[in-house]
Length: 543
Image 1 (tube, rainbow, N blue to C red):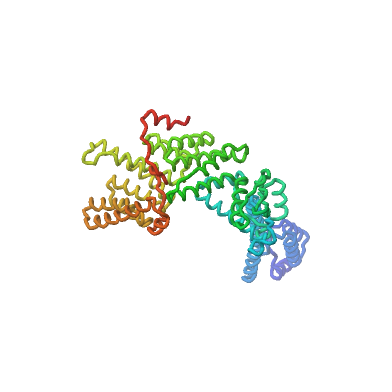
Image 2 (cartoon, rainbow, N blue to C red):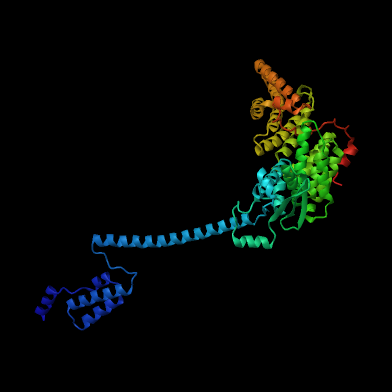
């Protein structure tokens, strides 16, 4: 027995229970160990059984990994882990890319649908007599000239209409978003075109030109987006083809968009008044026609028609009538900033300054983007500060009030210049407000900015620069500024006189900006006497 035990220990070296527990955590290994001991199985056989069980468990559980016995195996396992993570990351990235593509397609589809859904005006081919082809007028050229006349009317109206009206007209489906001639524009998808046709989203103008004796007649039909079709007609002598096309475009637009046509008529009258021939009867008639129309589309633009009439009254220096139309516009459209602005201008002309300031405050409250509203309010506040006696004659409390009002005006001028960085008048007023607060360096900077923006009409800016130079004891600079102010004032005076158009062009007055604020754009008669406090309260009342 002793010899046998010694032989077993020396040759086979049985594996201890502790080493078995260190090399494995599997319950099957423990069972195999117990069985081998109980049945006296050789240690070699037990070791083989343990290896087989480990291999079987490794295959049965993919998440488990065999122990690493070499550096190469460790590197290989690290590579496998990285490859697995890379595959997972690529799978996630692919899903993200697909989601982004789907989102981009959806956004593009929405934008395309929105743009395509907006109303357009389609101009059909205009039938033209065959013998007009010798004069260069075919159906295509007549159609093109008709479109050009419509576009010219739209451009003219845009110079008079406030920016805000464009958005409102698009929402109302009455504004020509763009003019599309069949075969010359980009066609929409058939489904979108069918949907627009179903809801009458697009407008359409069709016409033909015929000769009746010595008269050339252009007759057609105009259909508003979402509205009914109405006929129009224009006539001229047979040798005036361009004239009948222009008249036809205006006649079509009188049905398609009366407000646009009335605005274009007002723009034409204002330009003629600049040249000394003031007559607003045609524009009045167009706006009044809108107010008397039974069309629901025309009634939507009634506030804007009253606004146009109030502007005409201002040009004619009829400030009470201007107030009446502005009041009517605000009754139809509460907080109508453009009407309140005209109302304030009229009150200012009538020297109802507290009421004018109140209206200007309403303008900037409900239309903060309007730079002219901020400038006009600031200018009115600044006028009250400038009207105070010189600082040496003021008491301490009055001087503080003057400075406070000047600072309040400064805030409005800053708002105006931030919304319109090329607003030269606002920069001049800003410099004056700083001058009253004795902030001379900043005032000089603002005034010089105004002269850079509009050097030809900077007489007031140069005169204020001279004042600053005097205060800062710079006589040479003051003399130069006064000379420039004198030249600019003479230039402005010659431009605003009733010279002939050729003389105005010779003087370089074509780019003379309109006067804003307390002066009307084209007033030709003197302002009426101001009213007393009771009358001003009535004129400023909403009802």
